Image 1 (cartoon, rainbow, N blue to C red):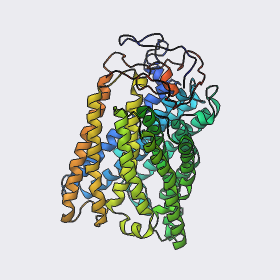
Image 2 (cartoon, helix red, strand yellow):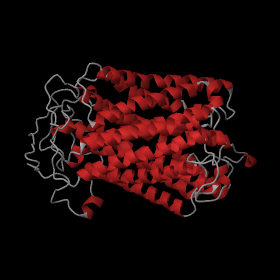
Image 3 (cartoon, rainbow, N blue to C red):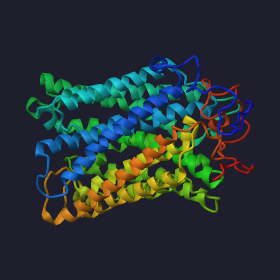
Image 4 (cartoon, helix red, strand yellow):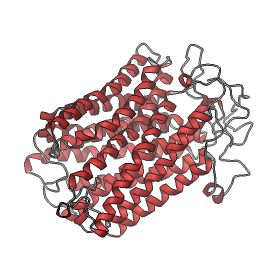
Length: 549
């Protein structure tokens, strides 16, 4: 996407031409950040916030794996284990994975990709961040005032009768949902109204398509979760009988409500990750994306089909056989657009001039890990297989291959890809690659053997287990240490780069999308002049300039 804006260059590692949004003399000091309506600053505030949540959730995970090193009690009681297990899931899902890509990377990148100066509703954007922080503070308060032991799904009837800060935690998730809705509304309006002149729907980068489809899910599905958790809080406080069978309610109704939101929420998490991969693979293969329209429409198809597959989480809940068969069929159906994406990514790489920079290494890791997660999802969509594997460690492995092997790996790919644009610094490529390799192998050591463990009957969520499974648990725990080492190396590499002077070229990867047409980091209003689209986002026929090694 070439633009008519004046190009800005870097000479000798020094920043040139225009002050960046990080150095703008009119926007300095803490209050300038707390009151900013600049989408880039809001994106960075989201980024540091979700990374903090990721650290907290990861520490909970390491504690769980350490406790599971042996079959009996090591350093935490069964009650404490249940609380730590719940908090790991709740923090990772609601405070990290759901907002990580749309709210953090999407906020920063999407307006730049459209050639816009900001999002459609800048003040609503800032409000969404403060709503997120309010929900996060409420969640941390719930952790510190008794915790919760219901699991991150808050299943009734246990969640309506157990002690702890369940009501406060459900209200925190209720509040967090509004942040997600505000972000979704903003992105839909931005894509419709603020595209650069000459940019039609089929000229949009695929990251925009993925973020747009995600925003639709955020706006339509999140209110269902809000109402469900509100009903759960009322049930706990006033015993009104919605989910209590003794009062004429139905505890399984909660599962229907919860998964009607939470299965689309899986795609709130994974669709933006897929969108990142759709940017990185053509950039580092130096080829036009294969099947642009198929990938774009598959994002919309996933968003729409995601609303009608929630029942595959409930094959053992007592629903009718007809309903189970229908949901099984729909589960297979939703795999088709995901398969289209994987095929097109591999086809794009075929005979491409592939550069194995760190973002591309993460993208290849995503292809391998997400494919395993997707295929095992097909297994679980088969009724006879799911009945055997339901509530076993097979589910744990499948979920993590989709969520971490998919969303988190794609998030790491996106952070490394856009880091030079966000901060104007290049990181140490060698150490970044080492971090990526450790993350890949550590993840597989942790979770691959859990498929076998689950197939042999090891139930999930259990504090103790039979001695025959200890070898598997030792392998998973050691793998978690390797994974953590890789993540800490990746974090150290990125943070260390911030100590340098600006040294990132405007377009270090030779990409064709519009965000690389402005300087690194961008100026406050993104572009010196109004950009006009002159070619497509994946037109790699023209020669591109790459960063020297």
